[in-house]
Picture 1 (cartoon, rainbow, N blue to C red):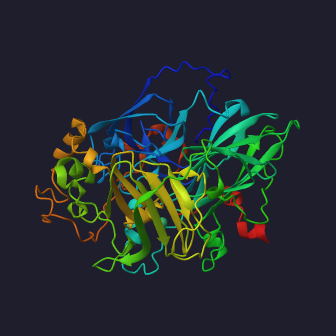
Picture 2: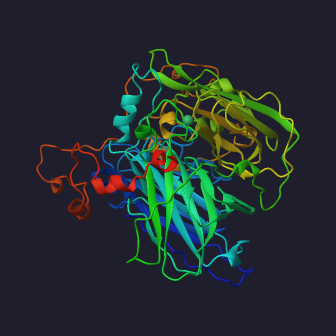
Picture 3: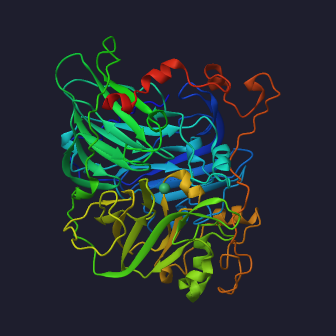
Length: 594
Ligand SMILES: [Cu+2]
């Protein structure tokens, strides 16, 4: 199971001498057998082990990941969520956008500066692979953390939905013409720290910095520490003025750093609730409670291991803190004046073959022949022409111009929208049913910044960035199933500054071995307006990472890619539900509300 990591503080004495280091990870991406909720299945791990390890660095360090794909049967790639990749856009890891897929038995080296402290995570940005397990925490420590004196210990709390089928199977079923309601796959269970135990040792009288990360493919996580009050100190990669909160809604891919003080009451355990919600504001009207609320999880902060470990965390009413009201620690004012506005209307849609898709402005995102960044760096002066990039929803902005992004969500669910390369300002983010944006009236003096925002049902969000990070950055829903439905668009930021940007040779090499052109427009043509080879029709079959299980073999060890240690503890897959002990931990919100 995923361990809770108590990271020793570097020092309690602030020091001004900081030596930058290089932290290097040599990783092989491998299939691993695991049973985090009691149900054995193949997952994507690192160096034959799962959960995937933590990446840790200090501000100013260089992080290097030498990534070798040992999946054998599938390509991969690695994105560092929340890292802005200033001057290192080629390291963003967005397959199809900033790089070619990494083929089996090839390696590439990701290298970037850990420039902003905070709680981040890494995950595959290729073919729905992170719900299959390829994800982990990425922590950038700050020896000069403004809250360093306010806590005694540091820990990570990851929450996630979890599926018993692999992504390829789930997405193939979802992308069928008979899916007329655009239903995403529904998870089987909830994981905390990549396991189903949820017992976290703590000491009385101490204050913990808890780094909450939502790894989910679909669900928002509602987090409550029962009687203990949280104090938010960070939202995604942004320090905020300390703000008390009793309940948090953490949508997929978001992070919160909170301080939690344990009373000095001697031996006592503290239950906490992680309730996964299918982004329907906990009020799913059409789904039965068993569908909507079966993934509740009660964990325990434990300092009395022999005491009561079965107490429930009871929530009477859901009233999560409003993150749009947080104030950034640096009190940076709203960016302005706005030079360009990018309006994105999200609707579900159908492709030419009647398959369910998700659209921005009536267009679904389709991967092109040439990764967009490689087109941008090779088209010279013509790289400002959005028509050169094919069906990737390209939008350009000049260097240092202020961009306002408006997302109108026409769906009845909440969607977590993420922009690569920036911590954007949230100018406005009203409640559900506010309708389309009709013009902002009130601009907050010091808007909060983060990299993933919950856009509520039938409502909108207004975001701003200053375009000071030349590069190609995806803007997409972080529900992984919606990415696979095409709910992405592409921000091409300061293309005039990318004409001489050098793509590292190992990244070029992996394209060439797969016959993928690395120059020209979306179709690999020298003339930017030549649309030959553009991909304009979605494929009707879905290709994804799928572990090849030789079911004719009687023992798992006959399959060489399985980890022998994990096969001893994890049962082979059977079409049964999770163990009853697991079910008991899933307290239904429906019950709690009664
Ligand atoms: Cu979505």
